[in-house]
Every structure is written in structure tokens, then in C-alpha cells.
Amino acid sequence: MANHLKPAQIMLIVAMAFAPAHIGYAAPLEQATEPSKAPEQAAESQPAEPPQPPQPPPPQPQAKPDPFAFADFTWLSGNPRTKESPLDTKAFTGEFRADTNFTYSFNKPIDDTISGSSEIFRSGEFQLTQLGIGGDFHYDNVRGRLMTQFGMYAQTTPRNDASPGRGQWPLDTAYRYISEAYGGYHWDKLYGVNLDAGIFMSYIGLWSYYQFDNWTYQPSYVSSNTPWFFNGLRIQIFPSDKLKIEPWLINGWQSYGKFNHAPGIGGQVLWRPNGSVSVVLNNYWGTDTLGLPDRKRIHTDDSIQVKYYQNPLAFLDMAAFSVTFDAGCEYGGGVTCSGGNAQTPSQYFLGFMAYNRVWFANNLMAVTIGGGYIDNPGRYLVLLPAINGATAISGTPYFTENPGDQFKAWDASFTFDYMPSQWGTIRAEFNRRFSNVPYFAGAGGITPPGGNQGAAGSIVPGFTPDLVKSESRFTLGLLVRI
Image (tube, rainbow, N blue to C red; front, side, top):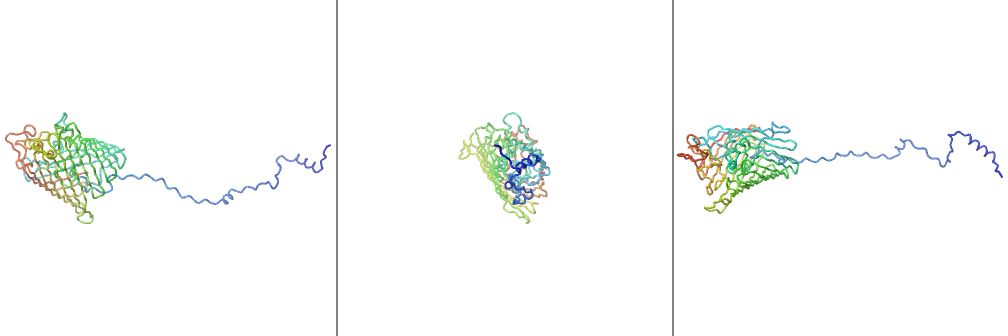
């Protein structure tokens, strides 16, 4: 039986059938959602976040200070007193040195020759001791140094090296015009590590090879008789900015070549705990007697320098002292370090030097007083007098250097410096020197009449050199370093 629709239901069906398509069925009122809020209203309804502080940049690694740059060490003997270079560039720092002196020996040697010194060689004459042109190369961790030596040093320094007497090739000629020449590399490890190979300064004896750097012109024997240069390899290690450790592997004791088969080994420790103290320790071992490979040499050279007064506002503005002590010996090959006898003599070296220096008028002037002493039986470090042109290779019968030959010497000096510029010094110095055996050139000189004759150092019939036990000299020097 069919259902019958009511009239109201029929009207609703018809209305929905003919309604427009976009009209939809409305949800019940209780299911309708709340209209969305405007963005600005939503933002206002949220709590504001506090502004964030700016982030600091990441910390940069702190550069380590350069070694020994924490204080001014230009007061030291052995250090140049220049504080800047007018010849400095990114890759090269140039250097010019000139050393001219006039020395007068009160012994008045007829041949104008002065013996027993590695700094002064002629009396009563103006002489160019050394002229050097060169400098330091430095680029991309590669380093190097060249310094020439023209003048007296080009002849007098090589003549004190006996090593060219072994083997062929004249090494003394090859190197005579060079005082320093090396190349090297720098590593940024610790506070710096340097490796250098070539000819470099030794600084055994504390005083520098260059008079401009020193407190005196003529140093005492422990400096004058010990090496000025080494030929070989060195490593400079700086564990801190106050300490340097420097091992050496070298040809020998101030030698262009080796004297025998073994090389020389040694090293230096330099410590400067503050701006007023410098301590340097040098030690060496080698075989340094030509033709005697069984004879060994050991040597220690230790120095301290102390600046004990400084007042830039006073007329006397600075004062410092220096003390150096040396000890060593040779053993084997017929000699012994101690307890020797007539058959096997003792052969050793003992010595010291001490100086006190005061500066005046804002470092315009300075006075240095000091001296020293050595005892060297066997004379293996005594500078050979150039009698009839004698060299370390030739020797001379007029002044023997045999085991057991005694030698003691002492000296004193007074030095006045006038320093109108950091690059120039005018120096006046008086020296008084003594020895226990005739050693210094006397009035008769040490050159045969008419000049040197025959082989270097040989006997000349009818000639006897005039050697005396004491000498007084006056030196006036003009020293330049730019």
C-alpha cells in the first residue's frame, strides 16, 4: 500500500529540485565554526618575544710574540744597537757595515805589524778592517743571509784556519770574501723553529765578529781566540719567547773544511728571563788538530750580562756588566786533559773576561772598563804570530805550538764611545796586554828585512823576530752599520 505525502512535504521537495546550484545545505547552527581573526589581531594576541643580543664574533687565535721581542736588548754586547732599518722591505732587509781604525802600538814595530789579535793587525796606519754589504732575505717562511767581508778580515780570518791544508781545492780562497752566507726555512711551531745551512756566526766568546756590535774594539783572549764563524748546519728552537736552544753539526772549530774525518758537534742555549739579564751557554766537541784524528777537543764557553741600573732622566742613564768563563781541553794523540807528564803533557784552556759599561747623556756616550786572562798549555788556541808570513797551516819554528808549550796572558782596556747616531760610533780605546813568554811584536817587528822570504813561516838565516812580553796600544775607530 503506497504512502501518501503531505502537502508541505511535496512543496519542500519541489523547492529543492529547482534551487540554484551554488546554494548548499547549511550546517546546523551548533556545528558552525567561528570566523578566522585578521593577521594583525592574531599577532596582537600573541605575547612579544624579547630581542636577542648580538652574537660576538668567534675568537681569533692569538699570535705568539717573536722571540726576545718583549724587551729592548740593544744594550747587550754582541748585539747591534740599531732599533730599525732604513733598508727594510717585505722580502729583504738590507745591511751595510764599515769598520775603519787607526791603531798605534807603543812598541813601535818597524814593520807596523801587530800580533796576537784577531781584530787589529797594523800599527801607525789607517786600515779598513771590514766592509760588508748584504742583508737578510725573508719570504713565505724561506730565509737567508749574506754578508761580505772586504778589507783586512778577508786575509786575516782565513789565515787562522788550518783546515784548507787537508785535501784539494783552496777553501780559504773560496770563502775569504764571505763572513756569513746561509739559507734556511722557518716553521711556525712552538715560538719558532729555524733550520739554516751555510756559514753563520758562532758567538762563542760572547763578543760579535763585528766591532760595531760590541762594547770594546779589542776583546780579551777568551773571545779573540775562540771561533767567529761555523760552516755547517744549525737548528734554532724557541720553546718560549725567552729561550733558544740551538744544536750545531759543523765542519769544525772555525774551519771551512774538516780537520779529520769527524765533524764538530755542539750547541748553544740562550736564556733571557727579563729585559735586564742574558745568559748564554756554548758547548763544543770535535777533532780539530790537522793530521791527528785521535786528538779530540772539548770546550765550554758561558757568559752572563746584567743591566743593573737604568734611569733615562739622569746624566748617567744606564750601567751593565758582563762576565765570561771558558774551559776546555784536548785529549788523545799524545796529550791529556789533566794529570799529564813529560811524555803525555796536559793540554787545556782556562780563561775569563769581565767588563763594566756605563752610558751617559741619553746613550750619547759610554765608557767600558775590563779585561781578562787565559792559561793555554800546548797553545792550541793561541793566535799564531804571522812571523815571516806564518799561517795556521804552516806554523813557525819561531813560536812553537807543541804539547807542553806554556802560555799565559792577561789584559786590560779602557774604551770611550761617542754615538751621535744609532747607525754610527766613534771609538777610542787603550789596551795593555801581557804574556809569560815573548809573544807581541816589539820594535824590531816580525818581518824579515826586505819582506817575507821562502815558504810561509820558514826559518830565514840571520833573522830573529823581535817578540816581547807586553804591549800597549791606542785605537781610534769609526764604525758604521746601516
